[in-house]
Length: 216
Image (cartoon, rainbow, N blue to C red):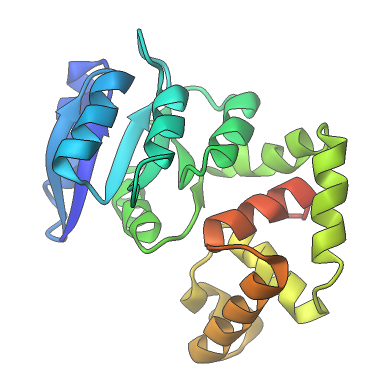
């Protein structure tokens, strides 16, 4: 069972999300918070697996709360939810080790599926922010050059798999795309993470974004 914490200052939004998630038998809402400070406290108290985090809240906003949560021991996966696909927030959220960024108009069935994906350690991004993230990262030239130097060590196949990870694909989806077995993809991913000195898939996805890879 995946435990979910909902964070939004709009109580109607919280209620709506709770209704959506109650249809998923493998997800359970363990709590609701209405600002960033309360979100951090709730994470410590309730130990959720996934946090749905509104960005625009009074007091401590969602980005600041995400950064604070990332510094906790064994932090949950944080998915930012917003009505605005603002480029600067996408880059900052990835830098804050967020699990991803979704628009609030994401279809209910897609939201449930993406929570499951994030809970398994993968990155999830709405299509709009995904496309603009590479362009936004290009403005950070020093970071871009560093990322490109790191991925230059990858083989053509490893680079293809890194691109798939950056696009938020699971191992099964990557296997289907490149026509390899899922076990083979797991081996490639493990070897690639070691080569890139990345601790997890989120860091690898961030590297792909900063390198400006085509994630479409």
